[in-house]
Image (cartoon, rainbow, N blue to C red; front, side, top):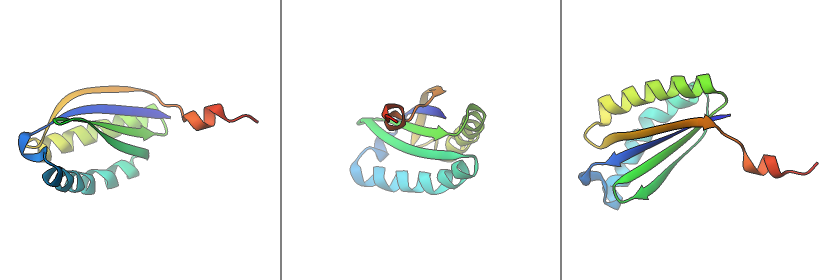
Length: 104
């Protein structure tokens, strides 16, 4: 598996709970179907601070993760540039910790 961890800065008008929830719902309605078609296995958003989110997206392989990232960043920048500012991306191998600790 391969994961993309992208960090984004939230615009001030989407930082409060209600606007944030509404924004995330709109964002996911547009991005999740595409990501699933591209091989998304799992996804989480971590609210790392009042103005920061980290999206964790796990794919079957590195090529799928890279393709999905290229498309997602383009879509998010084009449609959500007033709400999100890209900060950084980290990618790498993802291991399922419960599977690693199973004793057979």
